[in-house]
Figure 1 (tube, rainbow, N blue to C red):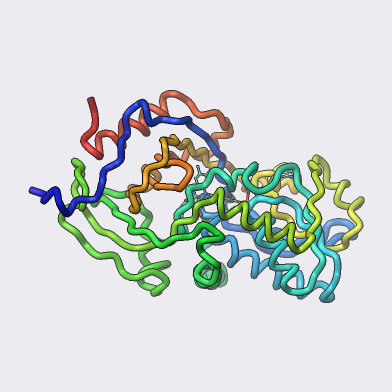
Figure 2 (spheres, rainbow, N blue to C red):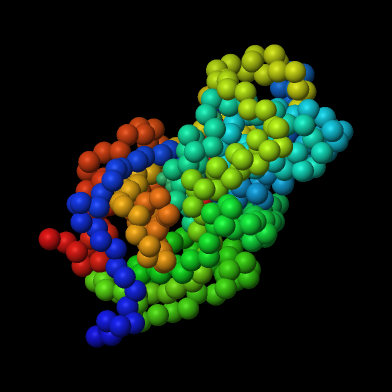
Length: 338
Ligand SMILES: Cc1cc2nc3c(=O)[nH]c(=O)nc-3n(C[C@H](O)[C@H](O)[C@H](O)COP(=O)(O)OP(=O)(O)OC[C@H]3O[C@@H](n4cnc5c(N)ncnc54)[C@H](O)[C@@H]3O)c2cc1C
């Protein structure tokens, strides 16, 4: 029996609290995240796409690797075109500016108007392939370490980043790779096993750990503000054909077009993993429940209920069947099914 005085508040998941449902397509790539240099016509193209379900998590680390490749093929101070203005394009443009380059961003949409704005986002490397060969695994370790360090160096109130306690039920679908990537490598402290959750619910407890939670609306606005402060131009443009790259004045291009890379660069390994989220009125709970893609994030603007990871589904309209499944899952978990 739990003592009521020690319990954390459970969420109110009643119909009256539901605000909306949203749906986004995670930009995945079979065979692994692509960060490499390519020659297309007269242009050197550095690719940085395929971040799947954890682009926010690995944004800074992958930006550093992509910018190292820019440095290998150009002189400092050069103009560089950055295609895309989701979290990946923005962090690349800022990293280039910090290294003394002159980036210009070209993109159809920017910041919170992109898929990046839909992410929760919990700092966890899930839903992404890095590739299995030793070099790719080494790269993964470097990206994770650097990204984690960069998040910890941010002015966390300005960028909307806070450390939160994450509770996982025993049957959680969290992938095993997290164990070695995060806990055994020491990036995050080892999880603690628990026998019961510190809130009313019907599930069997498993473990808890602490991880960064990124309030993406605040985070992306802060990245956009920094881009504007540094006078990095953002040119609204949609690319439909590779010949449009030749028309750019920059000879170095960093491609951060996510799913858009598939059609433009003819990469058949690019695929989407559809995610539906239900937003409820914001509730100040101070903890996360993480059960694979069925998670609950107390973001400042809304209580976010996930979700799903539907591979090769390209429809980005939330469907009622999934909305009901998400609400029922969380109501069952918290013992609130009518
Ligand atoms: C439901 C959901 C939940 C998620 N939760 C998390 C989480 O908890 N933690 C986490 O780390 N990540 C999470 N993610 C994943 C994360 O959102 C993505 O990995 C990340 O947004 C990828 O960033 P990106 O900049 O590569 O892509 P995008 O944000 O999609 O940006 C792509 C950019 O390219 C532009 N573009 C594309 N094609 C063209 C074109 N042809 N011409 C011109 N411009 C173009 C777009 O306008 C946009 O500016 C989640 C994603 C979803 C959908």
